[in-house]
Image (cartoon, rainbow, N blue to C red):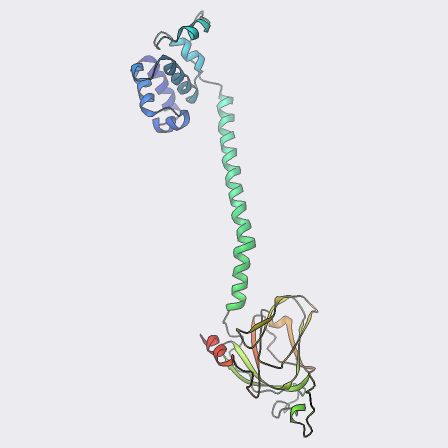
Length: 307
């Protein structure tokens, strides 16, 4: 091994660099780096490349490249005539010295800062994706697929049309316009009664006589979904309602309602509030005509709700 090769190798090992890492830094093939350390300059592709490779090697390991070339010029292959005449003769060559510590430190900190900025940028992209895509989808799916029963107790039969605080109000349905001895040619919307029918899974089913009008009032923010024709029917409303907002839906067919906050949602039918528990959490209710004429989706929706 030559004296120049030993000097370069010692500097490389002091920096903790392997030949593979040095090859990546200098873009000089590994077998050329080995040839430089062994002093086998004949393996290099010419005297010009030999000097250029030694210069790049020295700079990569923190040595002063010009001093290395000057100090070991007798060991290196002779430079081309044009290059040799341009090089000033060194009066008293000195051993190569390490490059300034401040330069190496600034380069390392520069690489570290670039890496930190790159990872911070990637982290910001992932965070924004999670905020605006993944989290919103998860919240929507949770509201629409949560099958947790609203209450473990099955509510008893009740009839809307009388004050629900009266002890015997739920025993007998309030007579509706449809049962009047003298029927009118066109039923007046907003007249009828609603009676609890059954509970299946997390959905309460009510039987509707006549064509009452349902008002959905919100005392606070709540997600609401209303469909005509059952759980898979025509979508009438699907949004996040705000406080004091009111939605009106005529109960003239099968109406499915799903709210994410029962405590912020009040259901009023013909002026009478429906007792839906008023507990924080989701609530599903389906209103079905008592005649069953429009109840085309009831059985399939109930089977889906039980799954």
